[in-house]
Image 1 (cartoon, protein in one colour):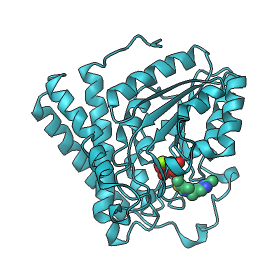
Image 2: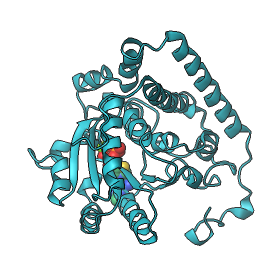
Image 3: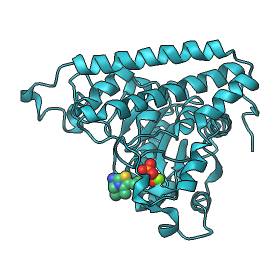
Image 4: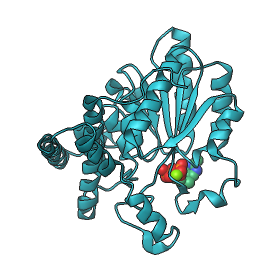
Length: 333
Ligand SMILES: Cc1ncc(C[n+]2csc(CCOP(=O)(O)OP(=O)(O)O)c2C)c(N)n1
Ligand SMILES: [Mg+2]
């Protein structure tokens, strides 16, 4: 199936994918470097190693498309155009943060960018995306909804209820499963039956589904373009499962390979398949982008990230008297 007709991406698109991935990586590396200062006081679930999924999917979306994400959402927020300074200020708990400093890393939002929100209830946002798609259908709007979730989310009841409902009503929702093989420390082998791929669950609900390499930004992007084309044509929901790998600990800035829940060989194999290094080599070799162009772009990103941290550090905390405002949806931003 290739409804978009796109099989290869242009040098311009490839460069944009690189910029998005490198920006996400740099932001999260800076979080790693500075987390120990104890000024970011919320838990952080880093997506280092998984950037290609966020970049490839979001680049296929338009401004009025809306996405939702879970606990590991920095990449999705940034790839969809969320404000970097507001994200960093949120992680620092400052009033200038995208949730007023009260949500932290797991409650990002940027409605202007079409990032409807992130909440850490595993599977919870799948139903929200389906709801967004239902609302769009009822209102006759063209935008599509996207839910990003992990491999553990398919083990929840709400996943199946949501897929059943979306399939029945042929809703324009793209379901993106980032299969990084683990739920915290538990590998897929102790959680899901052998020989039953995740993608089969979506097909069981009558949903068009595909499983792809989530560390190949161009492959992700082409698959997302196809999915979006099909969704806009009114052909019902699409499910994409992307194989990828989280490099750092489940929650926090550190490496946790000393714990022993994953084999060093497995970790090394995925490190050698870095989505950003692979894509950079492809830009130089296949797309003939000059090294200097990438160097300038990387410098710009590094400066932007430094500025965002400075903004976050220099912003004020929310005043104590506002501690209980904006807690419920009726008064949310
Ligand atoms: C309903 C629910 N159950 C349990 C948790 C605790 N929890 C937080 S993240 C996580 C693992 C999620 O794994 P996955 O969906 O594969 O995403 P990943 O962390 O691998 O990106 C769990 C069990 C939760 N947040 N919500
Ligand atoms: Mg996982």
